[in-house]
Amino acid sequence: MKNIIVSPSLLAADPMRFGQELASVEAAGADWHHVDVMDGHFVPNLTYGIPFVEALKKNSKIPLDVHIMITNPDQMAGDYVSAGADILVFHIEASTHPHRTIQKIKSSGAKAGIALNPGTPSSAVSQLIADADLFLVMTVNPGFGGQKFIHTAVDKISELKAMIAKAGRTGEVDIEVDGGVNNETVGKVRAAGATALVAGTYVYGAKDRAAAIASLRR
Image (cartoon, rainbow, N blue to C red; front, side, top):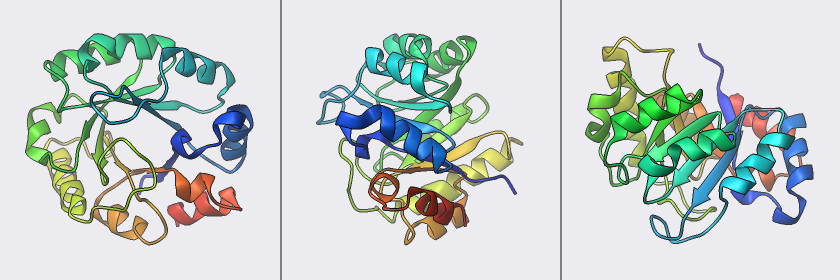
């Protein structure tokens, strides 16, 4: 069985101590840093941009899992890869040419991921199963941390797992879950087929971050 990837979300980190926060979760056993880019248009919040990703890349010892929640991913994807994204995830709802954007990301040297909002069916990415390296299932509405887990998203994870298996890509494509992941919900998403877990408050809000990360893997 493939090892579970844990990607703590910097959205829950202390913004006055980003350097220390990076080092803390790395020492605690994190696999990736999850970076939530929000433009205030596609989602109702404004966060990090390209200069921040560049700064993170200079200081990070593990891959950057960059999730761009923006209205123009087709135009901006290459810039975020150039800035340092090792995995770049864009939203199918915002992309006019998702296949072309996947090609752009991969030709630039990063892994390409596609995110689906809670109201977007798995069928929206059926023609891209052979091309993407990762599918991100949003189990909350994107835009803010600390929201409650939407349980109907679990079926979408199972559907994507089946679609990936049918395409003969089991083990090649990750299914990532973002939103409300904790010790109460992790069992459901892992059983459904999730292989990568984004956890913000659960990791960064823990007194023992190593124990929090280890509990998600167990």
